[in-house]
Image 1 (cartoon, rainbow, N blue to C red):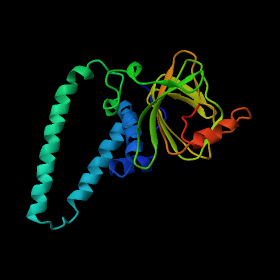
Image 2 (cartoon, helix red, strand yellow):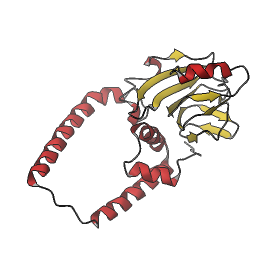
Image 3 (spheres, rainbow, N blue to C red):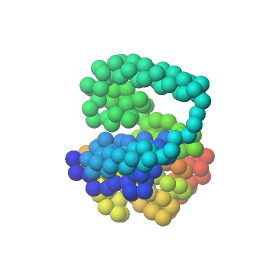
Image 4 (tube, rainbow, N blue to C red):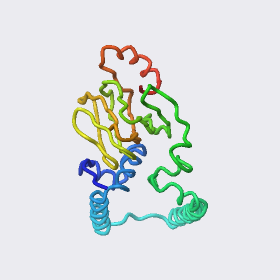
Length: 226
C-alpha cells in the first residue's frame, strides 16, 4: 500500500505524547496502522520519549497511591485479556477494518447503521468526543461528489477504502488529510470504486455553492453533513 499523505511531525509528536483528543487520536491510529513510514516515526518518538522519561527525576509518592495504581492496572489487564479472547473470532472476518475501529464495527462496514445524507453519500456515526467533535464514517459511491464547502473547524480524515480527489489532489487508502477554514473543496470518489473515510469533524461544514447554501442553518442545528 502506497501512502502519500501523512500527519505533520508536530501532530505525530503530540499523538505519541498522549495529548491529542480521543477523536483525533483515533483518526491518526487508523492512518498509522496502514502507514509503514509513520509506524517507524512513532517507534522513534516513543524511544525518544522513553529516553527522556528515564532521565527525569521521579516524584515521591505514598505507598498507598502505588498500591491503588497497581490494583487498577491489574484490573485493566484482566479486562484486556478477556476482550482479546472474545474478539479472536471477529478479527478473522474483518481484516480490512483497522484494529482501532473494531470497538465500533462488530464485523464489517456493511453492518453499520448507515443513513443517506445525499444521493451519493451515506454516513455512519461512531461516537462524539468530550469536546463535541463528531467521529463518523463517510461512504461515497463510485464517482459520487460532495457539495462545495469549507469548514468552521478542523476536519481530520483517513481514507479506509478506495480513493477520492479534490482541488488539491488525489487521496488513496491510508492517506491522512486535515482541512480547516482556509480550505474550500468538493471531494469526489474515483469512478472505479466506492470510497469509505473515517472523519473527525470539530464543527459543522459551511456550504459555499449557490444552490446548497440554504443547508447551512440546518447543519448548525446538528444535522449531518450532505
